[in-house]
Length: 151
Image 1 (cartoon, rainbow, N blue to C red):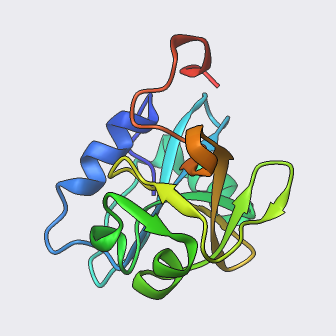
Image 2: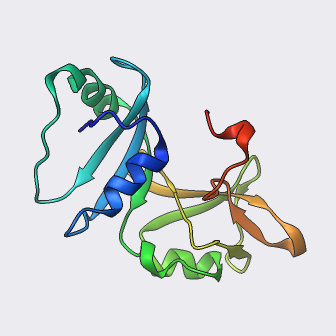
């Protein structure tokens, strides 16, 4: 579906207002008919898309990538957790270190209470980056630096 959200934050906020919460909700950056954020939902509810935004729905549906905002276990991913705990508490299938491959099960991930895994080929994959003290942090942060907010 597409409501024409201009930013990921706007789409995230809209998703968080849904009651009941969807089982899975992903955002997709689309270019048709103009650059914006489309949304895919796994829910019993239906949502209408304006006819002029239907190309965005088609683009999101054919894409192989999404950014998960809601997914099973997301509410249990707070604070510092080991990779193993993240995999046990949620539907995330893998935790990867950007450019380095899979993270080891005992590595600590400082979640910052904000986890947005990628939905790729039917799996949720949390991409992380190294942080101080041998820990990891999710690649996407709640408040990205200004140089990255438009990417």
